[in-house]
Image 1 (cartoon, rainbow, N blue to C red):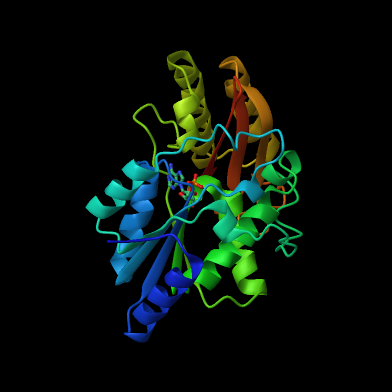
Image 2 (image 1 turned 180 degrees about the horizontal axis):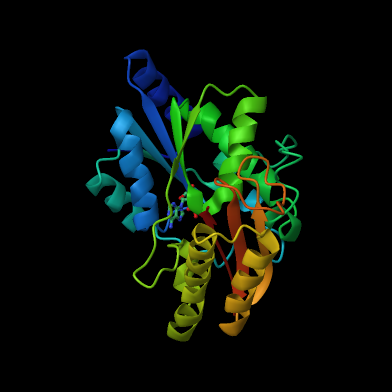
Length: 278
Ligand code: AMP
């Protein structure tokens, strides 16, 4: 497995892969790898000859009061996990390799990123779009694999790919969960035992809403109230509970197949997100 830190080396190596006829898959991550990330790597391996995992805690997607400094980092362990899982190359740049000190260009998506996480994390999706656009220009992937766990992020990236004509196919992997239902996340390392008990209410609430929908309840307000009540009962602080159209992320009144319930809560100081597709 190649361990690459420099942008020009990554570009050269990836270009060679492409020119030798390989299908290149990119799995962008912020590291502290868990089974959710591994499922993305597995998906990339299905159709790609060369799988590149980027490990980069991207400063531009964190707000000034967010957890950039505290975000868990475990680079050595991540690299050995990638090696074990048959990754072809890891791209592990430093921040000053990715961003010039006077960097002044960014990629802003102006519709799908306005609500939901975009409302409580101003600038977040511009940071995400910018770094993913840069990674596309550094790794030249045929495919990029993202997780459904960050549903809004995947929708925003899909829009960026379309609107900026990136020749990249987006693949989305389902949410991988811990035994108690919590969506796996690097931020779960912040949770205490009692936090984890409370956080398990998130997936339980989404599951109940899903069951009610399949039993015939299609009123979005009724379903989101149900989710809200379960989250409040568990002592979680709600950022948002919304049921939206899965494509344009506009709130819906009547739930149809393919619509998505999206949730963001604070469990203590830790912000957690989750979703389910009806
Ligand atoms: P992160 O390292 O948190 O930025 O995540 C990198 C990628 O892994 C993103 O595309 C996430 O959506 C995806 N991911 C994170 N957690 C999970 C999970 N529990 N299941 C599936 N994909 C995930």
